[in-house]
Amino acid sequence: MQTTEMNQTEREEILLRPANGWPALILSSIAYLASFGLLIAAALLMEAEVYSAGIPLLIVSLLYMCFGWIWFLGLKVIRPGEALVLTLFGKYIGSVKTEGFYFVNPFCQAVNPAAETGTAAAGRDAMSAAGLRPAVNAPGMTGTTVSRKISLKAITHDNPKQKINDEMGNPIEVGIIVIWRVLDTAKAVFNVDNYKLFLSTQADSVLRDVVRCYPYDAPGTDDLSLRGSSAVIAEQLKEELQNRVAFAGLEIMEARITHLAYAPEIAAAMLQRQQATAIIEARQKIVDGAVGMVEMALEKIDKGQLCQLDDERKAQMVSNLLVVLCGNRDAQPIVNTGTLY
Image (cartoon, rainbow, N blue to C red; front, side, top):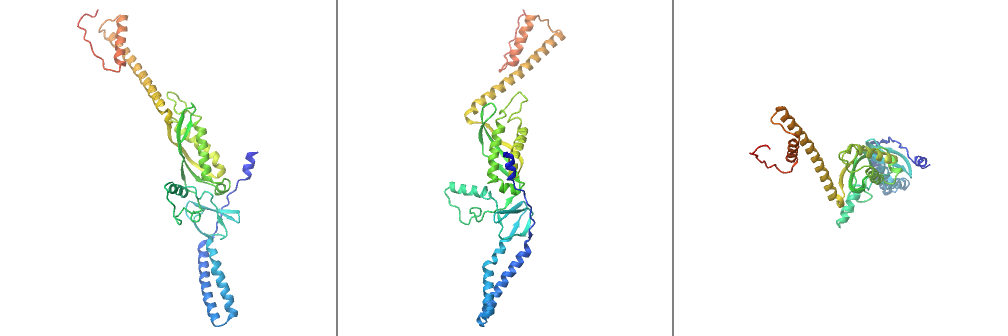
């Protein structure tokens, strides 16, 4: 039931191909110049006391000079990688996604609820934190200067680090970076309140859900882990996030973990455990190598018939060689000048 209701509220994107803006610009400019000419003609007729023709010309010229600028509101410039979502008296009429200079209904309004989310809002927050007041006419600082166009380019979203418990319950700090773009402008504008904040919230949620399913590290095993299986984790993050933001008309191009570390409160303990694990693995390799060297030494002594050793002497030789090969310090040789027995 919930899925059906959600699908009913989705908006289908309508692509518009408005008229070329150059003819409208030229005609509007000519009309404005003509209104000035009519004003001058009306003044001359009024001076000649020809009121029957001068008064209508004066009214027409003044009215056009007061309201003729409205036509210039319909001129829109679309750069590469930009789109414009247009509504007319609250009704969605379409999106312009092709670059160029166009003329649309001057009463159409561009809609972008996430226009102030990003650099403009970040700039205001930074200046407020520094105790500064932004200039009134600073670009991107007021609602009148914020561009209502939607960027279709690839955008990088860097989520702040979060403290999450992994599969083993260890608190870790994780940061994620998401590369995304707007695919459907109608869904991005009308299906969610603010598609940028929606993406950020869903990225936090997906990161928590995925991290909780894997341990931080799995040394000595083939199990998946956050540190050892970064490619698999990144692909899962991308798929999970894409499923959640498809309703908003967004496409996830890449999602990767950029920061992964134990939380400060357990970092020292985890470092000791990693060091102990590394020491044990190193000792195992040393013992395996030492046993192989002892076997090779005994085999060469027997094959070369250097001396005959009974089982007790072989055991003593094996013990001595293992102590020398596995010890942390250099062996101190003792020269025996007496008899073997």
